[in-house]
Image 1 (cartoon, rainbow over the protein chains, first blue to last red):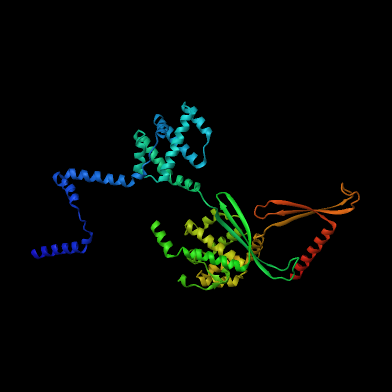
Image 2 (cartoon, rainbow over the protein chains, first blue to last red):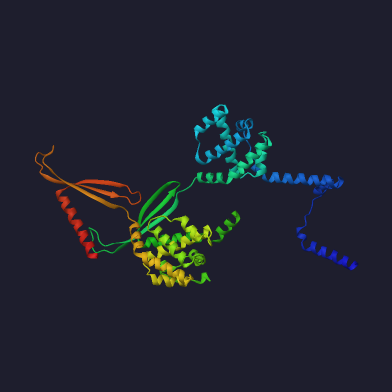
Length: 262
Length: 204
């Protein structure tokens, strides 16, 4: 039994020695601070651990908390004064507007039905749209979203409603935002034609090969096309340049950058 | 296995077969020869100008194909048929080459039969789709005789007015181009055009 005990101790030492470069070295100050935990009982230590974890979580993701301006909060406060079915309707309208654009007639219809001013309805819907778009833009997670809207002082059900609206639609909103970003024209198509000039008014009996190219580009909805002509030598040069551009993607430098982005 | 196939294929224009096509061979092998024939007929119709009837095609292949597999099969067959027609490959050579790629014999047989029936039509359509800068639609002319003008009392000159209508193949719009030519200049123009026509005739 003693031998067994010796073996166990030996194994632990081996373990520690082998991995000792991963032992933390605590400074004296750090040890002083942690000594407090020995003076309280286990339940308190458990509580400290829980608080600690939450703080870590918030610190790590705190940059994604939305900060709502006072004006924004004012506009959204209207949603607390109506009942949940109306809020759901407002949510649906906001998503429609985000996808397809604002329709002013909806504001007047809603204002009449609820018996409030058009401006209040408009602010409510716009505030909701802004909240959704900003949350989707920053990829706010569930907890941060709830924390951001808790400053509005809504009740539980309304908060849950807004959260479910956000979660259902964030992917779609991100798609819409992506389409709106600044972009250069995209390559769409390249048509080509090889022809041989047999003669002209000034010189007959020629053999002049040439390539005519039509490059189609698209910039959102606008298509553009360019016609240009090249001779075979230039075409070889063009293909070589494009191939070397493609090979650059496989170089070490590019691979390192793509790995670090992923 | 597929990475070792580095031969030149006529239907790819005497180049290597593209890697993505090799990757889809296993999906194409899953089709029965009847389904292959039906799918190829749809694709030929699409290449000739009409749209693919996706619901019908999905019904044919719903048993063993997912949506992405179906899209891959359509892309692969479309490439094979259009590339072979582009390079004027005959049915037998296409048969041999596809079998070398690993497609089963019956599938290749039905594909090549559909191809051989339609190669002439495909080539006609591709020829019409070829790049063209602009097309001449109509030529209108009018000969006027100028009797006199403010500068000279007795002019007595004929004048030809020409209106050429030019069609832009990309937008389909027709733009008119009108100009006037004096008698002498018009004779020169006619002579040059006749020279160009005789050069063209010598070629054919």
